Amino acid sequence: MLTRRQVLLALSSTAFVAGRIAPSGAAGTLGSAKAHSGSETVLTAADVHVDGYPTVEAVRWMGEVLHRETGGRLGIRVYHSGQLGRETDAINLARFGALDIARVNIAALNNAFPLTDILALPYVFDSTAHMRRALDGAPGREVLKAFEARGLVGLAFYDSGTRCFYNHVRPVVEPADLKGLKIRVPPSDIFVGLARALGANPTPLSYGEVFSALQTRLIDGAENNWTTFYTSRQFEVARHWAMSEHSYSPEALLMSKQRLDSLAPADRELILATAAQSVPYMRELWVRREAESRAAVEKDGVKVTDVDRNAFQQAAAPVLARHLKDTDLDRVYREIRALA
Ligand code: GTR
Image (tube, rainbow, N blue to C red):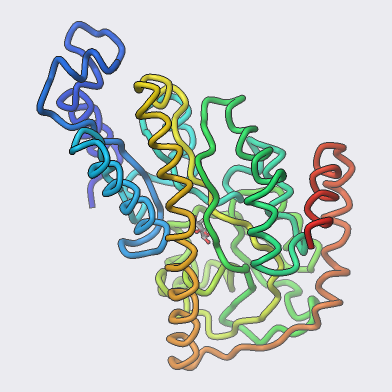
């Protein structure tokens, strides 16, 4: 695998070849791109997931559509499998224009963009259909808009199923069964607070570190969706899965505002429209891959337990209540609940 430094160096030379950075040092305008006529403008995208994961495939599909619609002028290169580093790095690279597109989970955005909390908090959505209604409606639009305050443009949300706890120690039915277990959580105050409220010992780690942390028993378990559990191979170590479904924390597709603003208005519109079109494409892929992943891990012998949902919801309630003291979060929460 390339080191992050190598990739960043490669990215800046790609930018040069693509005419993003004019030799004179002028900003990458359409004019400078034209000066290198015949060369394609390749947008760079980062994803921590492996090749073939629905988020990676959806962004790649976007690239194909852009390529076709512009006669080859625009395209996307997806750096999957965390080649460009952690999600928090991708967010910052995109904010400062060193990366064009960051596909990250909402959890990775919680601490920097407080309005995103509402999408990660426990037991906010009743079902996938409910979550999609909220994301496709006013609440989703408001959260996407909030990224602009800090150098990003929210292009779209993608599904991420529901997150559940899993571990290699014991089956979990009640929150009490999580007591004392070292559970990896994403670097988000919500997930740290939630794991603690449920009695676990939260250990924030970046995604790329989780598999080996499980394997070396640095952690006892983690929480995520079926597709990630399967594609990251965490199921090979954590053999107890509990249907806690405590968060729907969706994926966010973000673009560097600096980069988008540097493009011609028609190209900007095309990117926004293509991102919107990639959502139904991704959802279809997601539903299929989620079912296949679940079937594969169950076939491999992972034990699935139903949890005492009321007990989980009650134990998680103080985390929700604490965040809803924020008036904006409370307002959006009410809008979301009205769509249930
Ligand atoms: C996955 C998500 C990733 C990453 C990961 C994690 O569900 O798709 O983007 O955030 O969870 O827990 O770090």
